Image 1 (cartoon, rainbow, N blue to C red):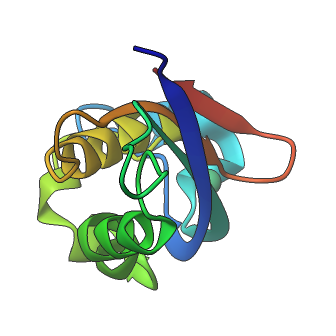
Image 2 (spheres, helix red, strand yellow; image 1 turned 180 degrees about the horizontal axis):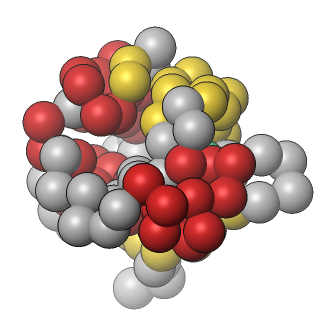
Length: 134
Ligand code: NI
């Protein structure tokens, strides 16, 4: 059966600093430079799911359902948060885009019902900097 991809873009704003508690303040400054200080981003998140086209609806997934799932599992949780103080699941990792996207993947993937699957995430920290997970 032919599988198609469907993508929707989301936005949220959050603050973080890149800081490893196992390192000294000086080592964090050397490793992360200005990013070791508290700062914020307007994140863009592209969520791609893949699946067969349902013959009744003509859809892989209803965009409205995808919006609700991602808003409930990720956007409403992270928007206007400080990762360090507000998101306990991120307390043991450095708040890089690489670690953040793995956390986001787990939350969305758990809420996408078969036969549709989460197939790709793109997380933009800025227009020029992003990470992908597939
Ligand atoms: Ni940053």
